[in-house]
Image: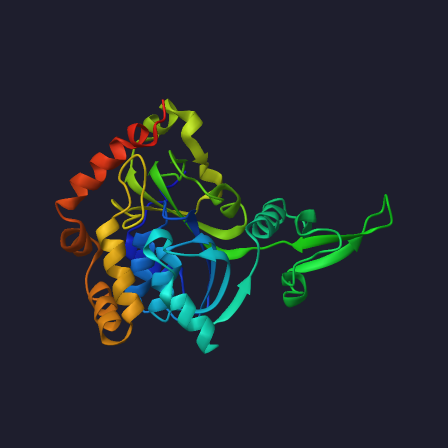
Length: 303
């Protein structure tokens, strides 16, 4: 097989305006933030974004004006507050929102990964009690159960043109190790036409083979590999590093204020390389974040 490794800047060509893009990670963990920053540098617009359990990734793209449509179950900065740019977009009406339950999205991704048109979903009750069903007839539908004759709720297959996930390490062919919070990334990579894996480091295949149980994403699903150290920052990538609380708090305050402060923040991101970002924002604090990641089992009481 040929090497699938490309530079981060290749995203400028791989993802265009108006594309359907799904981002991996969950909560404040393991989001492909280096890819998000590169999309901001590329000044992408009209993206149709899919964020399953979103955080700073979706919020930052929304703040930059890159997103016209958001399919999501949750976007939050958790302990650092609401997602200000999502709230402004929702209240202003300029952002198209497709809000689904997390399990609905899981069912839709599963259907796409299995190459079937829909998946039964009894999670909203029978008959459904949620108004989400009526709001999104392009996602939810009903079929007749051939065994009982009863009407059953289904979720159509949900597929993105591009999915981006972040991994601990990968080889040049795309076999990727993940150790820590994985969210729905395994279903996400099966439900996209193009899969891009950013990773902390590209390693020889022998390193991947030494711990085969960690290969959560196999090469045959992956189209491109991008080496991006601290690529999930400011979210966490345990066991490499914890989330960056000071930076998340700083962003939350700036995004809440909006206006010139937020514009200056985004302009600074857009005007620097990823290496310059790591030097400016992470710097020596990276050692502290890494040590917290190393001590994660002690901090959580895990054995």
